[in-house]
Amino acid sequence: MESLESRGQMTPIGRAKIVAAMADGSWSLLDAIKRLEKPAALVEAMKADAQGACELARLPAVGEERRALVHRQRQDRCYAPGTDR
Image (tube, rainbow, N blue to C red; front, side, top):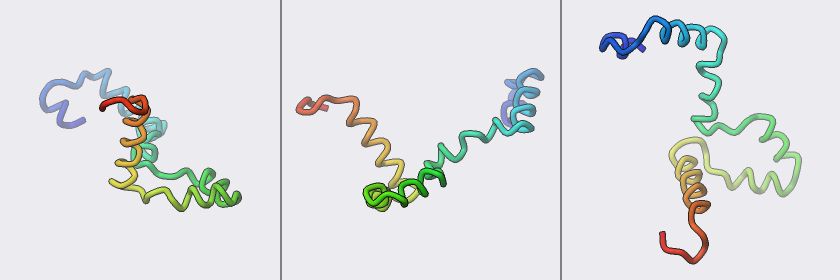
């Protein structure tokens, strides 16, 4: 935010919106999703099921391996099997 302000690209209204979002928690609402964290409730539900526990164990840890897995899954959905990529 300071960088935008120093370059004259932040309006008072924009700053007020950011401050309000930080105050009500919506500014950081998606941080865990961006970090690809596994939601605790999902982990517990998967642990309670034998197949779910197996799948949970196969998931890479949070970080670059997990990001690569998500990226590959997105790419795979974009192409039909047997077609050139």
